[in-house]
Length: 150
Image 1: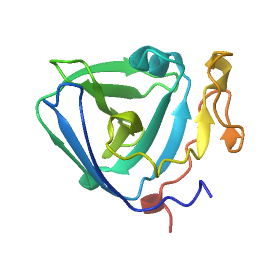
Image 2: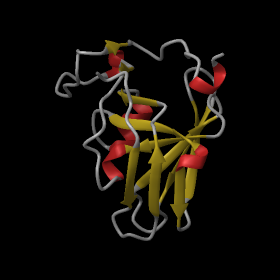
Image 3: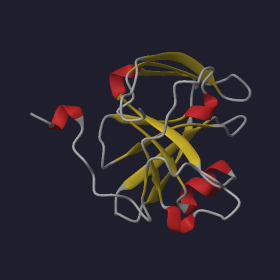
Image 4: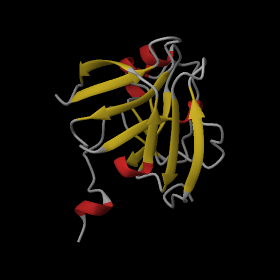
């Protein structure tokens, strides 16, 4: 079931290999996002992202960044390779200390199972994503993370 994230240990890299990333841990959330910013950042219909706790992610190499203000008013910063332009990870002020990792840069993404689909109001008709999990027209209310519970 998509709600049960498994432990992940994989590496990834940008197109030119100047920036590498390693993730080791359970993803906090896994989602596909169709917002216009993700479409523009990916040059396609959506981004498939896994969110990890900061200590579970190691980035090597220098990145450049670009920050946007989201619909909710938070600041979303995308980090990319300054040489080849590959998107490596993002951070969001709504989730301090978390890394949003586009799973396409990882060597093994077979574990990825989206738990939700976001911004379906912006989904192109040609970009088909799963209806087997909850789809949201925009961003859903922010559920508590495991560290927030209890």
